[in-house]
Amino acid sequence: MTDLTHRYSRRPDLAAVAMDGELVMMGLDQGEYFGMRGVAASIWDHLAEPRTLDELCGLVSQEYDTTSSACRPDVEAFVDDLVTRQLVDALP
Amino acid sequence: MFTYRCYGLVIRSHFELSELGGDPVEPSTPVDVDIQQGPVGARPETAVELPWGLWRDGEVCGIDIPDVARYEVSRGERIVVDPYPQADERDLRLYLLGTMLGAILMQRGHLVLHGNAVRIGSSAAVVVGRSGAGKSTLAAEFARRGLDLLSDDVVPVDDTGHALPGYPRIKLWDDALEALGLGTEGYERIIAKRAKFHVPISRGPLDALPLRWIYVLETQDGPQLELCAASGVDAFALLHEHTYRRELLADRAAMSQHLQQCAGIAGRARVVRVIRPALTMTAEATADAILADIDAHRLSGTDHLEEALLP
Image (cartoon, rainbow over the protein chains, first blue to last red):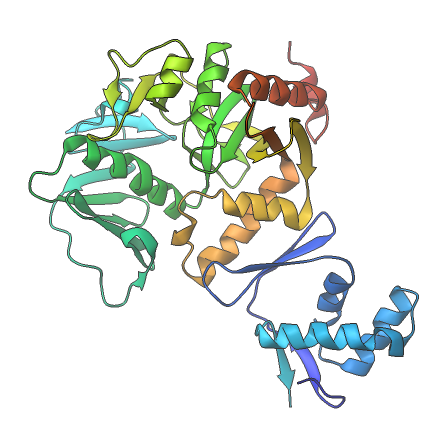
């Protein structure tokens, strides 16, 4: 589960490429790839360096004309998903 | 020993592979790929086990086809075939020219698409689709209209985005042959037990050509034939789905390379879904739609000058 003090960072060993403004990346499992568009691709970009959930929500709210609290449930769910799929590490 | 030239490679083979055509190759030409008969052991313990009897162990992969042969492919330069007793020669060649040659091309760093390629001016268009989608029937229709076929079934694309010419044969089912007015008389069966035939296609030698258009054959229930351009994640998913023997992308290095290759090709070529009405589609209508799309997008892309010089 995500929490407020953890920092999250994408795994350095997964190759990703930009295609027409969208992002395609390989997963950990054989033959597994993921595509990300829009806000998902943007969050992935921000995860190039370790970020807390608060920081991510702040960045997303600036880019997508919303508030940090309004986007929090979606950002949290997405980051949870990335952690579950082992695309992102939760740093202690 | 027999020597052939195919996909830009000089192939020396213990087995006669008449499908590859008879272009003479100078005896002094250096050999790129050696096909031998010899013992092939069971799948190594360190290998990743893949579907359909395939396995991969780093730069070596293989397949075990019961009653036909065990095959092993190494470093893009050697295929060893170990036939089972009483194996049918045509079955033996089918896997050799299909999966094994596909693995060689993959090991040599090409993105291998499952489809066929035709020459359009000084560029290439590729048609991909699932088994049974009508790729080869469409290839035959293109050939009937006088277009040069680069290859049928397996299209390697190199790291500069060029499609490599294969061998001038189409694999057609008996009903497709009848529909094209050819009949099955005089053509060689591909597999001993099935009514699919090799149909030789005449064409001169071709160079590798820049791949500019990729058409994906699909079907729908409605009555319309529609073309839908794909981009981004969608274009990647289509190229990935139609990569030949993509099960062999079994390790991180291969997956990463594949990702870069698909992105590179999608950046240079127009990727289009061809959604055909399942009940009423014909090869003629599909060919018409694809050729019209090619015509409408000849000048898009990066090499305006080259295309503008075409007749």
